[in-house]
Image (tube, rainbow over all chains, first blue to last red):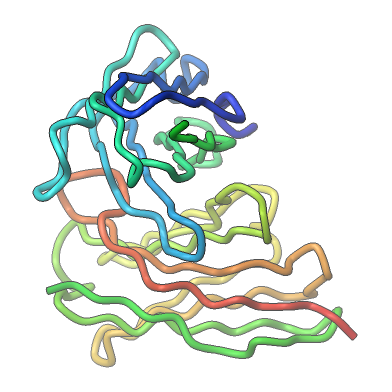
Length: 111
Length: 120
């Protein structure tokens, strides 16, 4: 089971909206609603931002939203802020023997 | 309030066995649907899922590491133990344990992580 594919980097200016992609297959992203997104600042543990494709845990800003089309999931960050600069990882359940898989990660830079 | 914390050696020699303990609070691993997973991250690289153990003792492992991994739980002590055999320098990474809630298939609380270096 290969990792889900994410762009290595995405950048944007403060206040802008950016969208991060996460591409899998029909056995993971495309086949189930169990896509989640994690934010990781340098030296810190990952933080859950989105689960079940579109849902936000309590306490996560509504500037973060998730969606999915086919085998590609997306995380949109609206009103980009300096504090959003971090690495972002998608993940998904997979029906393969792997059971669970993370993405390759995207570094978000706020210009 | 859910908290998790990893503990174990920071340095292991090649071919040795790594044993890490995840000590948690704020939830019970006897609650239906709850799981504790292990994830690692080599320096400067991406997250890699290792495995998970559930309240009912069901467990799942990354196929590429399955032959080397064992995850066990001690519900009375609120601990989960990861054992990885035949360690290699490529296993150098920060190892995290994380809580999987019963209603969602994701990890909503993570430990701070522990860096394990494999070197002779």
